[in-house]
Length: 108
Image (cartoon, helix red, strand yellow):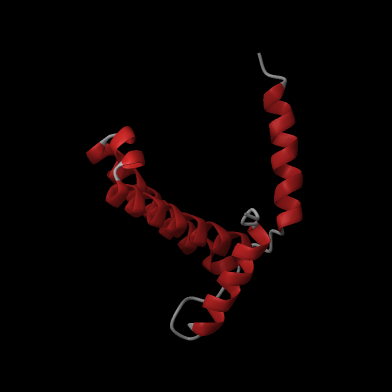
């Protein structure tokens, strides 16, 4: 199975934005803050599943796992909206992620 790339996610988000143009806030720097807040809300839903059920049960119970993965997908959808709002490309993210990884590998 091919990995699911950030580029693919962003293309899907662009399609959603086009589908709901006029109903959803537009993508742009001024709406980035709101997208971040929505993403945090979705992150809270992930936390609630784990907090209420425990990590092992959330990971292993088929119904809870389905809910957990769905909420994680919501987080990623808003994450990609945020990237689109600020014009952050997958290449920029990869460069920053790699740099941060290399810094962290040299700690302690």
